[in-house]
Image 1: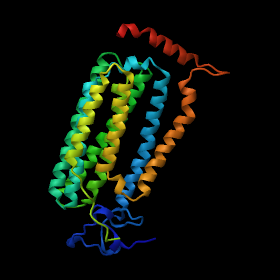
Image 2: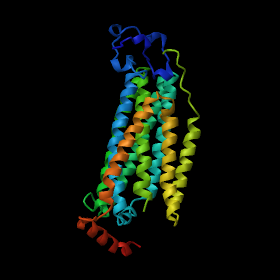
Image 3: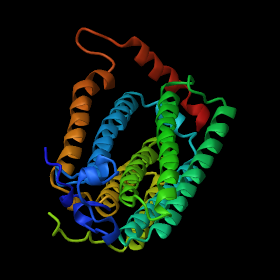
Amino acid sequence: MNMDCRAAPTTTGPRTFLIRPAEKPTTMSATAKPIANTRSATGIPTARLITWWVIASEIVIFGGLLSAYLMHRLGHPEWALSADHTNTWAGAFNTFVLLTSSLAAVLAHKAADALDGPRAAKLLRLTVLGGFVFLMVKAFEWTTDIREGFVLSSGGFWSYYYVLTGLHGLHVLAGMVIMLIIAADAAKNQELQRVECIGLYWHFVDIVWIFLFPLLYIAR
Amino acid sequence: MTTETHVHHPNYVKIWAILVALLIVSVVGSFSSIRVVILVAAFGVAFVKAFLVAKNFMHVTVEKRWVPYLLLVMLAFIVILFAGVAPDVMSHGGLHWSNDAAKQSVETGMKAAPKHE
């Protein structure tokens, strides 16, 4: 097993090989950093490699659910009537919010590349704010739907609607929590390689919503 | 390995503006009365938006080659799942079977249609 940490990145991977003099890698035994930050056996820093595998598994989770929804939807034209009750404007606004938060996340990555931890932290917190707004709009939508009598057991469409948006919402929430933890370190110019990793996850969550929006709000 | 170059950061604000413009297209298209226009505005635009995010924000195209391959394999699994299961789910009857519950669900649901018009 290649454990040569001199070839390992300290920031954002082989594409962004920025090694700060103060953090010049030595050997595993000489560093207290986790292996995910100091090893790059595949040519991709292990932290980012793990992130890609998480995303790969998430593709199967959301892909399975979305394809199940799609095949049922195609077999049940009456679901279009249920979809007519979803609020297109709220969905569109949430898409705008997530796209904007993704912009903040990628700008945080850019700031981390420039070794500007405090700016990266600010941008990550801005991304979290976007996630918060997204969840508030979602809560408003769910409240409205439930008040109108559309609950999880109201029919096939609503089952998928609540499961898909609920699972996606949980991913947004998880991303927000992790992002705040990473931002706290980034503000001190520590563990900047994590900024890109959480950004990748956030962009994936954004992509999932990009497909949920037309499936649940537009196609009628 | 240490000689690899710095990742190119494109103009992210410009890409975000394109994404927002595409969002507007999909919303405006959803109000069309032509079904094809709605579908293209909804799903065609969604694929373009997803590609732009993956390419420019996730930098998939400049990642090690096997990363996009890994993601494509996962997507292929989904296609296989869909192709294997969808024929039974989408049709409510075959030569030797009938999904009466699904047929009844469609019938009941469609009867309720005029109430929502």
